[in-house]
Length: 182
Image 1: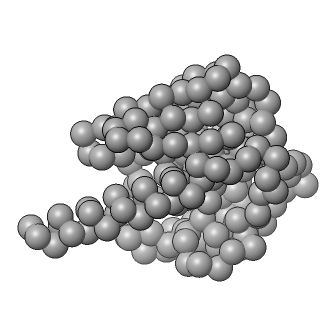
Image 2: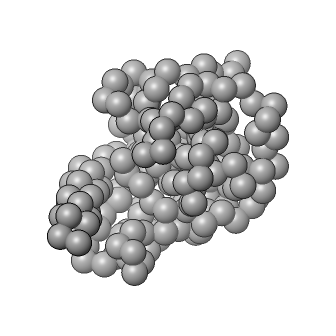
């Protein structure tokens, strides 16, 4: 039991540090391609990109979005992806948006037709991931167009709102039990 609490405390501390580091990031700051990193994170494994790969860009913003901390200590957002509402866990440690197969199919992505672009290192072992470009990701009026994502062939339970979206915002702040996206 003590081990679980210790693991949870480490996870929360790491997430807080990662989110705090993003707080001063500017929209105009250059984005580093996830494939250029080699830190073992599943989202940074080598991937192939389709010919239609376009850098993500911030499209519009209606101000700020406030997210309350959930009972499981995470922050969740309802994102409109390509016109479909998807419930996502905000994960500043994920280099790109990670979609469950179920959510990808709900958006209209034919997952089986996407080429495998690498392997995801998960707690359950290595699983294939398929890279896709999302036309639009909108969280309560903060929209980013042309956002890279990966469909993960594993039982993640929930899709992750990662850096391919978050790094395009003016700021991401956590104060107490509230996360603010600007």
